[in-house]
Image (cartoon, rainbow, N blue to C red):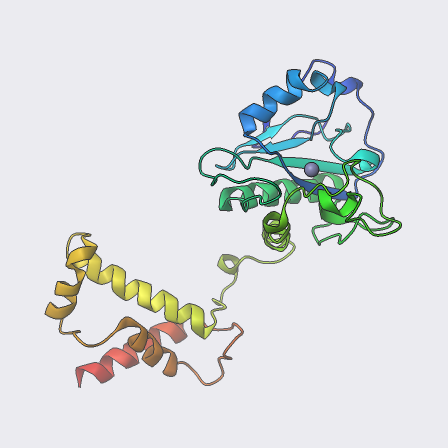
Length: 288
Ligand SMILES: [Zn+2]
């Protein structure tokens, strides 16, 4: 039995354990529902062969990151055609709030919460079943990792690819969602501890651009806080603080200029101490 902690166990019928067992764990495949999470739950249960008689995926993800688990990952789900024996699947909501109206293959992107939820699923599958967290790239024999339905759709699938659909030209999960697979992969690797998260490091690996943005935000927030959180009064506080004419971007650039010469323009290695020293240096200059 394999159930994901944090996912809501929602079997589609009592006979879930009577389905064929997974034979291997090679792919985690992202799909789009053309529907809502609750609507798809009903469709899988009754509208489409009832229970496990028609198509269904292992997981369903709502726009707020809610995860339904429709099938135990010890057993197969029927979302990936000829690949069901070694593919774990997630269907992702794309209809209703907060998604825009869309038609054809113009699927809106996954919400940030859906990216996070799919990364959580991928990280759990990696630890539980050994599915790699890199991007598989295709459904060809020997490929493994994170996947999208389109890999195996006739019309898209290259020669030799395992067919994951009989619907020629099916766009699932859409161009925008396919473009988010690297973000899911990167986040899943962090969650699984394959790559460190910035917070786990002693040094903060900022780039100069990130630091400039952080500094601008910090100054703006400080000014807004000083006027009781009313952003439309911020310019007055800015004036009263004697900072009139000093824009945040310029100040940020000055702070960046005070950073140690060893900090590269595009890679990390900056410490909290470096940032604090640079900020102090800028304000010391301004006070003289
Ligand atoms: Zn699909």
